[in-house]
Every structure is written in structure tokens, then in C-alpha cells.
Length: 360
Image (cartoon, rainbow, N blue to C red; front, side, top):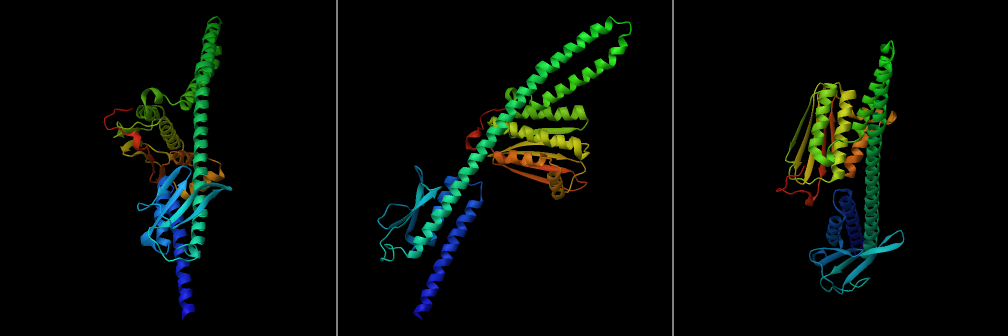
């Protein structure tokens, strides 16, 4: 009978350990939870897996920061394990009892609890390292996009201010030469070709450099983008912005939302066969919503993604990557013959909203 109780006790301890590690893994899967909040939740969760959960408290130290349970206080009855990342100790986990308990294998703690706290420390260290890596990759990706935007602006200025101007000067000089010839119409095809090239260069420069974001703000820039689609390509695009006036939108977020809209409208123009579309920007604190819809031919999204990978077309992927860098979410909804809807939700942070402001 004693052996049976021993086995049952051991099994219960194993189950508690598995529940603890599984619960921590589940908590970590929610990438939207900031690391400090995640560590607080982990500290709270591990208390339930110790022998006396009703008098257990926990603390996770990471660098100079501490994340504790609500009932935490230092006591003599504590168990600790270091957090090691690539061989370096970056913090520790501490589990304590708030009251004295009978001595066991390690003070009042079981040998199984030593194994558990070591396993928890290893798992938390892996989670922290992954979060740090994700933050670093995110920062590098943001810098890459920022560098791309700077390069786009440089190229746009070169095209518009130099090459297009020089070609315009060439057209002017050609007109003077043609005027002196007995048959000036012979040079007209050359002039037409140059004028077409100038228009193409200016269109390219316009696409590379979003007009008005710095001067007028995101809302006006999107309005111009939709107006251009309507006028130049005869696809009416209705634009509206609601509840955005109180948001102080960071420039990186503005440029990414502009590029997302630009990519979506380009896809509508080239592939959708739509006769109308709409773009709506909505402020719903603490997030911004961008909704883009068309009445085109739609698509089978699963097959489209596979086809895009095969054809090395990066449109949908680049849109998803931009949203990921903004810690947002993007949803595509489409069926053949029923158009496409794209919904982007981007958090703008606690300090980016001022109901009394009148931001652009």
C-alpha cells in the first residue's frame, strides 16, 4: 500500500510539472503580450505547481528588473534557479514559501521541485532569448525599411529633379532645331517619345516618394493616392477617415500604412478587374484600422499564395511583413467573383492618442 501511495504521489507531481511547463508554453505563444507582462504571468502560474500553492510566492529577475506575484515578500524558505542565455546568467527565478514547512529534500522543498524550477528556468530563458531575438530582428527590419524609404526618396529626387528636367530641356532644344528645319514634323516622333519618357519618369518618381506625408500627414496622402487612382486609371476609389484626428501617428507607421495601401491599390488596378474600390482609415483607440475593398474578380487565397511563391511575387508577403513590423494584424478575405477585402489593425501605443489634439 505504501508503494502505491508513493507511486501515486510521484505521478501527481509529474502531472503538476507537465501542467506548469505546458501553461508557460501556452502563455509564451501569445506574441502580443509584452515581455514584462508575460514574466509576471509566468511567476503567477508557477506558484500553483509547488507543494503548498496557497502559501507560495514567486519572483523572476531579469537584469535590473523584477517581476513578482502580488503576494511576494522575501522569506528564509526560498528556492532559486539561474536564467542562463548562451552560458551567461541574465537573471533568476525564485519560489518562496510564506510560512515555515517541514524539512524535505531541499529545505521545505521536494527534490521534484528542484527539477521543476530548473526546467522552468531553462524554459523561461529560452522564451526571453527568443523575444530578444525577435526584437532585434524587428529593429533590423525597421532599419532596413527606413533605409529603403530613404533610398527611394533619393532616387525619386534624382529622377524628378535631374533626369526629367534634363529630358525636358532636350525636348525644348529639339523644338528649336525642328523650327529651323524645312520639315519640322520629321522630328515630331522623337519629341513624342521623349515626352512619354518624361511622363513615365515623373510617374515613377511619384510612386517612389509619397507626396505630402511629412507636410500634410497620412490622411491627406491617402486621399491623394485614392484620387490619383480614380483620375488616372478610371477606377473610382472612395476614401474616408473617421476618428483619426486624436492620433499622433509615428512616421514609420504612416509610411507603412501608405505603402500597404499603395500595394493594395496597385494589385486592384493590375489584377482585380474591379470597377470600384474603397479605402477607409478608422481610429479605434488604441488601434488604427485600415480597410481596403474592391468589387473585382476575387481569388482563391490559398492557391494564390502558393502561386505567388512559385512565381516569386512578394506582394502579399511584403504586406504581411510590414504589418508584422508594426506589431499589427492583417486579414485577407476573398472568394472568386466576390472581390477582396483587406483589414489591417495596427496598435499605436498608449502615448499616441490625445483626444484634445488635432493631429494630421
